[in-house]
Length: 179
Image (cartoon, rainbow, N blue to C red; front, side, top):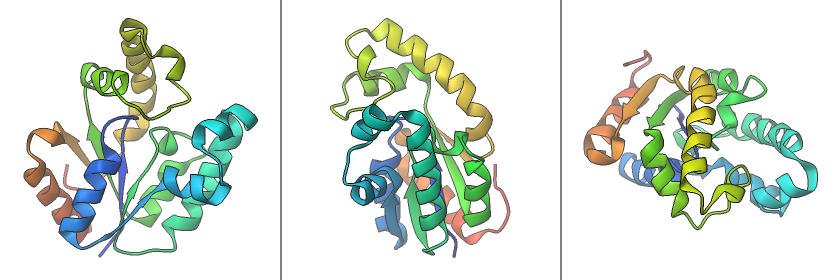
């Protein structure tokens, strides 16, 4: 049995889907952002506001290293930027298998525009859907070099969740990539 790391853009549903997958596959579940918030006793937004993104990314890497090697048979939901900084993609690869929950920019924009979750990188764009979608497209383009290194890429997972869960189950028991 192995750890599974869900990666993908903010708002792609990693936490919601991850909880469901963990429950159905009898695995533990850890959301890295929730873990960081609990450890730091501050919201992600408060950390960004007080210390800046660079400090947050250092914390994120340190906590990723800590939790990635402390559990087995766990589904991890990672922040959208987690695999993209400080060679975190290598930490992820060394600690388990990764699954990229791919979602097109238009769908991400719709989800993020209606989200009540505070997201420091886009909060200033809420209410301007044109700017939000452009920002998503640019940032997604930069991040996909990391996301596309996943062991499994799932397109449109929300359209057939059961099939997506079965692919993750196969990956969990398989020691090779199944793209």
